[in-house]
Length: 232
Image 1: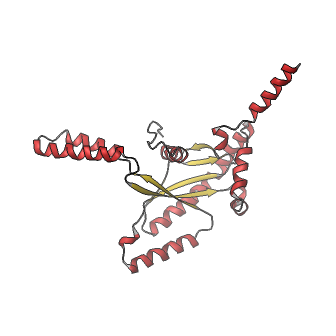
Image 2 (image 1 turned 90 degrees about the vertical axis):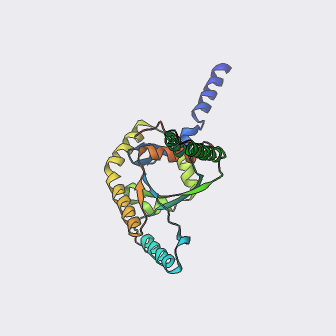
Image 3 (image 1 turned 135 degrees about the vertical axis):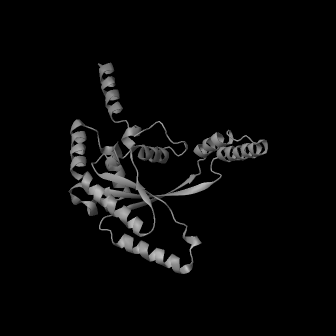
């Protein structure tokens, strides 16, 4: 009798254990859209940064004013993400290896080999050269509840993500929500891209492989290599 009760207790505890999957707020990535567990949708736009310090005072004022108009012209919330990451030179080193191997002149070949060795030493010292990455995260909340959901405190959103359990009904509901509301998210994303072009800044919407890579690097900061085996 005691043994059976003990098994029931252990079984109940096992069902309430939080694993990595329950801690993540998103459910799946479909094409170019991140679907959260609560059915909300996200698109992510990668922005090519502009070094405003290289511009004169008048040009800086113009850029700042245009940026203000861009933000004030939006009728929906956005999140601006700035990531500090170190420069990844693996692809460039492979490119240089391929070109240096084709050099026939001995002196130029030695210079090329020395340059490649220099790059490899830099690449081995992670964090030696840091770069900034800029992203604009565009949300769409079904049923137009933007204001209520944005005003939720961070701890409430975190607890909602923990308490959400995956069921067939929720999965089917998210698919229907995606099919019904993805076009509205696409419209908002186009507004952001057009606004960035008006600012003179290029941007591109991330697709499946880039979204997976970004999320992987965000939730695994100690692993810097992109997961190249994820293909769209």
